[in-house]
Every structure is written in C-alpha cells, then in structure tokens.
Image (cartoon, rainbow, N blue to C red; front, side, top):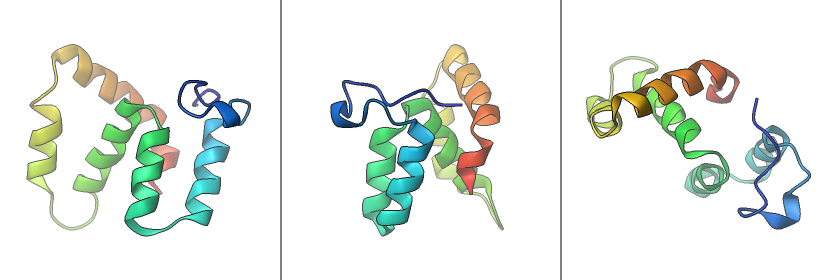
Length: 93
C-alpha cells in the first residue's frame, strides 16, 4: 500500500506507516478539517482517486468533479490515476 510518510511533509512522523497515520487522523478529526488534513498527507494521485470515487458513489454522479479531474490530465496521468484507484480501494470507506 502506501509507504512511510515522506520526511519532507511530516518530519516528526517519518517512521509511521501512512495508512496508520491516516486512520489516526480520521479518528481524531472531523468534518472539513479532517478532509483537508488527510488531503495534505496522502499522495496527490490517491487524493484524486478518492474524489473520483466520491463523485461516482451512491445515487447520481457529480459530473463537474469528473470533468475537472479527468479532462485536465494527460493520458499518462489518467493511467496513474487508474492504477492508484485499484490500489487504494480500502481508503474509500
């Protein structure tokens, strides 16, 4: 899954697995503040996957988010998003 937290992002947490850090943050934070902090900690492509999943789950689809994310990316970047989407399914809950 995800590696250890990058030293340049959170130097004091460099030896904590990223998944454990995210779970701890989610248990301690809430609302929009939680969303922002988790978005800053996870790799950008994984954040995009989470937003894509969120825009497609449940009844209806948020076409604006889909268009904003997918139409602004190159074929290579879309391929990276697809790979990350398959890898990060645990995060969508």
